[in-house]
Image (cartoon, rainbow, N blue to C red; front, side, top):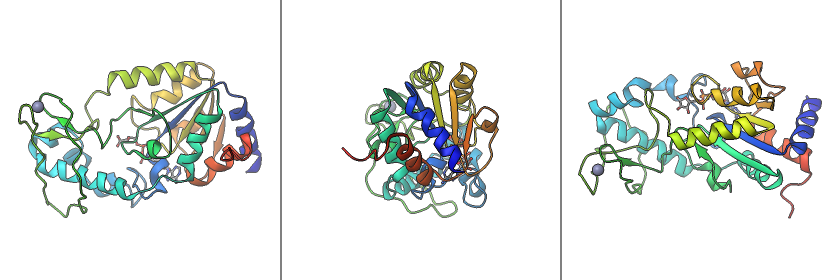
Length: 258
Ligand code: APR
Ligand code: ZN
């Protein structure tokens, strides 16, 4: 209801240090599928164990590489929406604001967010599976891989091992620098805005809880209830592309005016 947006806007307008914590729901209205939404979620349609684990890549590098090529192609065709622009407006308006995302797309960057922290890596940072040297991002697109269609991964220019997607797979550690920055920002913020995450996957899901435990105000934007309802001071039940612009407008007026 309106009162919740007004209340959240007042909190956001007064915040000194803001964390904007985002998940797949942040990109849903740009046409990038989430993982757990009924029917459309990637883990409703694909087997995460066969595609998003180190074992899967070792067993069938071409199947895994081809699937991530398709996901990168989906992101390339997508555009950031008004919610991504609103997040960049918060970074421009709040005294200190940082985006911490679980997403591996580049929509925050393309909307003008300066240095989003990618807890789960990026589709645009492939690297060698053996020597970890960064590899070039292949051009061109890949149609959604039909059952069993495979695309052999490129070979590392330095040691000729297969190149892998630069994303964090289940069972893998998160990049330490990203995790440390995220934990520091969550511990020192006075407001954390969590947008479009089911709050189910750890350690990323720890971030809003750290902020709440250390006294930050937590605002959640999600059309559905999530476990983070328990730590949210305000729940804005709606889609990111609508709620975020309304929130920024209520907090700072026409944020997109010079
Ligand atoms: N606006 C806001 N939220 C939305 C929207 C929308 N338009 N559409 C869906 N959502 C919400 C859903 O209600 C759900 O709570 O986004 C959330 C998406 O949850 P998940 O699909 O679980 O995505 P996420 O929380 O980012 O998953 C975390 O799991 O598979 C791993 O590494 C992967 O980073 C991912 C992690
Ligand atoms: Zn190598």
